[in-house]
Length: 393
Image 1 (tube, rainbow, N blue to C red):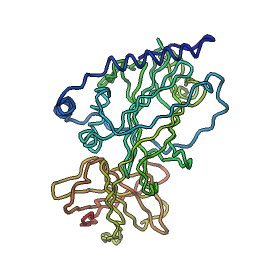
Image 2 (cartoon, rainbow, N blue to C red):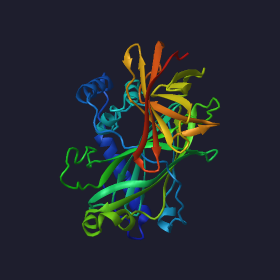
Image 3 (cartoon, one colour):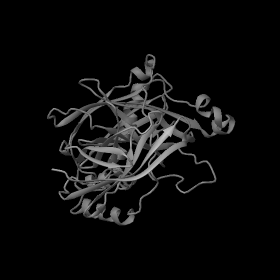
Image 4 (cartoon, one colour):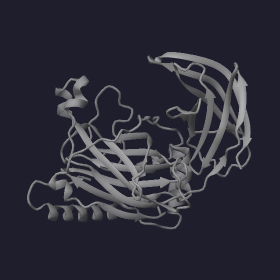
């Protein structure tokens, strides 16, 4: 939906009118519940979207940005505070459901009726951000929000360069490790998918960000009190044609004066099953330690450590995780390596719903890859077979 640009002294009245229009539009667009509606919808989406779409873009670690004082207009926007419980997904946009189904772990969450539909929004300087949906378990938290640009303006880029999530009670920042922005139309349907020979223009984007909860001490809590800060920006089609590409993101970014801040609370699915009995395997005179396997309802994380074969290089591993039922879906991508004493360690994530699986697991490391100062073009590769067998209690 579009939102009026606030350019007169009647901002409060216009904001209230915009909010009323939003509520009316949301109410009118939501399907009317009927017996078996959610089951039929889930079945239809499973059939139509069985093939995985585009892969997710992995984002680099977020470095907090500093902003000056908010403008008078931005400061006047009320911080949205909402407590969100587990509820129905009837009003969720069809495409958001479809996209979440590309993630095997979140697909299982939706089918169980978990996840939290939110639907709170703020408008600053003609830009509107709407927090749509969230889910949190012991390993990860996933948020979906929509950015609407200025009414009548077409963009080639519409996203946020801040996506800071923190715990309200302590201020602890939760690291972001994966995200994706998707151009959508006013009905929430994707724009330009499959188009490769032209620059797509749009005025709305759907953003889905995933955060790492594995290091958070929940302390038995059943909910999370959160603060999300985003700073949307756009690059218009006109700017795209006038500014050289190498200077585009330095000179052509436009956005509101200040951060959008959402304070909200969501229920936490805090069940985790953990295997933490170290197991070792040796090949190529290199010992690899499997130190932990952490299984939450939407994701499995595997941690391994090893002595660096060459301290001048940054090392990662190529894992292959299976069960008696076959390969575990959802990737096995690794985050930034870290050190534990003299060891190089890495967490490898699988976006799969394995929480109810109680059988045997097998992990094989097929290769160690070292990256030098030249990045991807400067590598050492050590092939091998480091095998581990275990059962997650």
